[in-house]
Structures are given as structure tokens and as C-alpha cells.
Length: 524
Image 1 (spheres, rainbow, N blue to C red):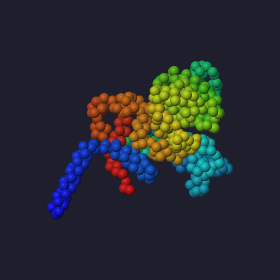
Image 2: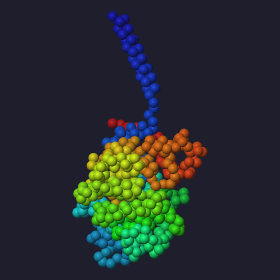
Image 3: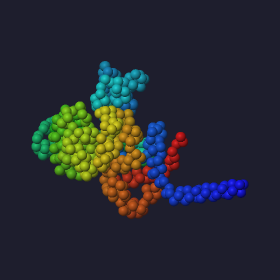
Image 4: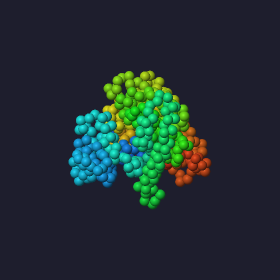
């Protein structure tokens, strides 16, 4: 009996050794997880813990922000500082900022630096902080803020550019397309003096003859000065350069569509000329890459003149077909406008207005034949700029009510954007956090959105991707790794000839570094 017991024990030991060897063989044959997979696994392990997810997303490369208004990107605290230094005034009841000298009841904005109550009220009035206590809807409070802080923006374009660039760098962005209005109030005066003419060609000729080229020449000089001022503030080209110097900033010239139709046409013409680098302009407009229509889409004039605005765009597109167009469209919800007005804004912006990108597109499923429209957008590669925080606080749309999942299901390219991060008290990292928490986006999906942002940026040169759906690189760079210190001669030559590919390569290098970090799931 004793001998039999020893025999069984020996067999068991041999069996255990065989099992261990088999497991080792299986493990040896399993592929090592890629760096991307490790990052994805970590993301999933902390998805339900915002305290761990947030720092991961802050460090995650994000490409570009394609839907961001320059004035709306600035935090209220900065406007208070700048207005205080400039001697501006504030109404103690409406909290609207105006130029000095101050006449009662207005008081110096500088008073807010020593009166915390006044400081708090100004911040709340010119941003979405505590908007629920304002007695207004999120929609109305949001759009009211711009008029209240407008005076603080008139001489601070350089400071605004610097702040926006510095924040973008801290959020791991490499590119911004900032919406701004480059032309002065002189353009409004010119348009009103010319008056409205149903004949677009005749009106164009009148504007040109009565001084439009001179107005645009001044505008380009002012924008160049703002960029130079930004570089000085950020200490660019010096050892103390702010990281914001590494962020490429380009501009979309805004058209305020809530103004009189003659002003809207003049603004459109001006912006097409600026973005088209018209030879009549001296000096050429710096870094203006396209145009957009702005102001609340549901207001009377934008609704009443919507079809007219689309015809204006179609007319000018024929003359300047190389100019890029991105349009706010579908920033509407049921109840904000009559049902019939929800049925055509996105479609007409694409089919008549020649939009290459759509901002918001929240009401797309209310459009006539929405699934056909989604297919059309996917087939024609029309991208949608998704602004989750903005859509929530302005329109009350979030979670499953948001059409993001339908865009994704239809194969429409999408990317996250901030819209007005200063007014909304947000940033691109928190847009990614909303994407993960509110829209259940995976790490892979967020990474694709970051890449998509640069693929659809209005930057010159061919793309790094021969296939932007699965991000297959062009043959010149197919054998190269962005993590390598130096690209091959063929790849480097390709990158040197394309601003877009250069930015995309920079993003890929950032992803390679980010994903190479040791992402291990936290201990339970």
C-alpha cells in the first residue's frame, strides 16, 4: 500500500509538469500585445473611473480642433484681466463690458479685482458658469454672453490667439482652425451704403468699386499683426518658447448670418476673397483657409434668409471653387423652431452650400429622408464636427438623444470639437471624456476621431493616408515608423511637400510615444 501511494504521487507530479509545459508553450506562441492594445486595455480598465480616465485622456494626442470660435475660446477670467488693464467699464446690472472712460452707472472692470462679488457676477454673466441660476435657458444665456464681452475682444486678438494656442498644446493638440471675423466695421458701412441688389454679380461689382479691396488689405495687415503679437507673447523662436508655439493655427473667416442680407453678402464675398488669396489683395491674407456662417441658427434672420444664404454661397463657390466651406447646420432641436424647419438645413448646406464639413448636425434625423442624407454624406466624405458639451448646455441634447451613433453607423467621418471652450468652461480633454462616458466611445474610436480631425483639416498638401478609412499610409512612408528619429529620404521628401502630411506625421509620433508608456490596469 505504501509503494502504491508513492507511485500515484509521482504520476501526479509528472502530470503537473506536463500541464505547466503546455501552458508555457501556449503562452510562448501568443503574440505580445501591441502598444495600442495595451493603451486600449488600460482605457477599458478605467472607463468607469473618471478620476483615472481623465489624466489618461489629457495625455492622449488629439490632433486638431476644427470647430472653435476664437472669442468663445477665451475664459472670462482672462477678459476681466485684459479689460482691467485696458481701463474698460462694466454695467453693474447687465454686466456688459464697454470701453472707458466709465460713466455712471458703469464702473471700472478693475473694481472686480478687489470686489469678489462683482468678479463672480461678471464671470457668470459672460460664461456658462452657473447659467442655471440666470433665469434664462442655456441657449439664451450662451448666445447673450458674446455681446456682453465683445468690447474686451477688440484689441486683444494677439492675447486670444496666445491663450488658445497655449491651452491647445497643454491638451496635446497640434492644430486649430479658429473661427474669427477678420474684417472691420467698415465692411458693414460699405455694404449698407451699396444697398441690396438681387443681382449678385452687379452687387459684387459695386462692392469692389466702392472700396472692398482696401478694407481687405487692412484686414490682412491686422491679422498678420495679431499673429506676430501672439508669437511675441508666447516667446516663440526663443529658448523660453511656450509649447503653444508648436500648435499650428489657421483661420476660418466668419460670416455673421444674422445681419442684413447686403451685409451677409459683402461678408461672404470678402471672406471668399481672403481665403482664395485673391491677387487683388496686397499683402495676401495670412492663414485664412476657408469660411463659415455663424450666429444662432434659430434666430429670425438666419431662418428667414437661410435659402438666400445658400444661393449666395453657391454663386461665390462658382467663382472661388478652391475655397473651403464649413457650415454650422442642424444646431436645432424640436420645439426651438417649427417642425418643417428641421427638415432641410443639413441637406441644403451640403448640396447647395457646398459644405465640406458640418458643424453640430444635431437635427439630422429630423431631415427629410435622413438615411439617404447620411449615406450621401458618407459617400462624399462630408465630415461632422461633434460638439458634445455645447449641444448639451445649449440644446439639452446628450446621451442616446445625440445623433453621433447614427453618424458612426452610417460611416460619416466625425471628430470631436470644443465650439466655445471658454464660454462653456470646458476643453478638448473633457470633450473626449464626454465621448467616453456619454457616448460610450472606445479608445480606438477616439483615436480615429483624432486622426480624422487632421484628415479633414483645411490644410494644404496631400494626406499621409492613401486610405483614410483604415489609415493606410502612402507608399513613400509605408515602411517608416513615426517613432523613429528620422524618416527615410522618400518619406521625408513627401512630408516636406505637404503641410497636412507633416501634421499627421507629428500626430502619429505623439501616438507612438503615448502608447509606448507602460499602461497597466490599476490594482483592484
